[in-house]
Amino acid sequence: MRWDIFCQIVDNYGDAGVCWRLARSLSSLHQQEVRIFCDDLPTLNLIASGTDASVKEHIDIQPWEASFSNARHPVQTPNVVIEAFGCDLPERYLAGLFIAPVKPIIINLEYLSAEPWILDFHGKASPQSHGISKYFFFPGFQNEAGGILIDPVPSDGEVSKANIPTALKETWSKLRANAKRISVFCYPGAPLRKWLENLGSLNEDIDVLLTHGHAEQLSLYGQQAFQLPSNLQLLSIPFVSQDEYDWVLSQCDFNIVRGEDSFVRAQLAGKPFIWHIYPQEDRAHEVKLAAFLDLYLEEADQELRLAIISAMTWTMPSEWFGMLNQWSIYAKDWRTQLLKKQGDGGLAARLLRFTS
Ligand SMILES: Cc1cn([C@H]2C[C@H](O)[C@@H](COP(=O)(O)OP(=O)(O)O[C@H]3O[C@@H](C)[C@H](O)[C@@H](O)[C@H]3O)O2)c(=O)[nH]c1=O
View 1 (tube, rainbow, N blue to C red):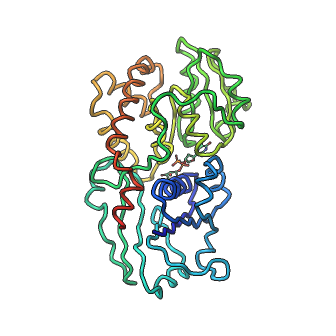
View 2: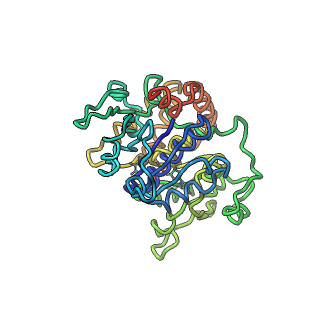
View 3: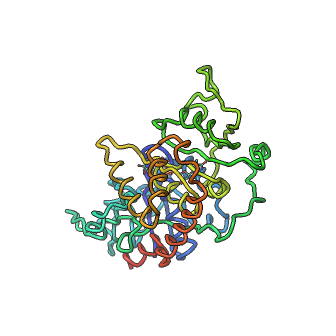
């Protein structure tokens, strides 16, 4: 089948991250023909840059306007059109679909959520005055939801420590052999300075990898004196490709992640993590986080449950860090269970079955 994915980048990297992961899954695992129309090609290309060339060459990445500019891209009706995160299709592209002899199915790909209500809406029709069939598709953890994007599935055992991405070689040479390793990718609202200072009260060395922009954003190295605890080493890493970032997650003992895609990747890395969920004005993110924790903590004993809830709500690490070993075992187990539940191929496979 032919697929057109529309990706409009509102802010951050998540829109491009999810669209790219979906495109590569459909193409490389399911041999689908995929085009992506994106309004921010530099961001998309950066995220996609580490993907194997043999996968990339089969995905047609196009600027947004190419979807309706006949001169550049003759109208070629796909079988499925994806509106990622409910973005509006360009009017001229939509007009092209009206006159197409065979109409595609339009899918409104929603945000990932563990909330139970999504099950009532997943797969439901969204009647349109133009008459082209459109459906809601809700990614989710439950069997009845749209699944999660699991491609590429990280290897079962330990990911090779040796394959250090070129962009990270210098940083990696500075890591201390016996130090715990934490990666940080969160939103500006996190109490990160206080959190890092609190790591100083722990009786072990810790290397902290700040992903692109964090050091500057938090002026950790600036004049506002940041009392760098002596057991702590802060290292900034550049923005790397999606696959390279996956590798970073696999090499850390603990990850702070955010949004949607890095949140899933942290789980698939099988490591403990803080999910700094995207803040929403009506505090809807708190409900979403609670819904996820309900699922994530189903098998945890009371002590671990309290430790994880504390961590996820930004209680200082001195309160829960002692539970890290138990959490690490639990996180590996969660990964195994997650992959088992998504054993049908996850979101890409469910989407394919839904639209076929
Ligand atoms: C740090 C880093 C991330 N990444 C990738 C991983 C992910 O695919 C992507 C980050 O996406 P997310 O984790 O989803 O976080 P985000 O904050 O960038 O995106 C968010 O944007 C909001 C507008 C949405 O509402 C959120 O749901 C979410 O998608 O960037 C890299 O490729 N290299 C890197 O160095």
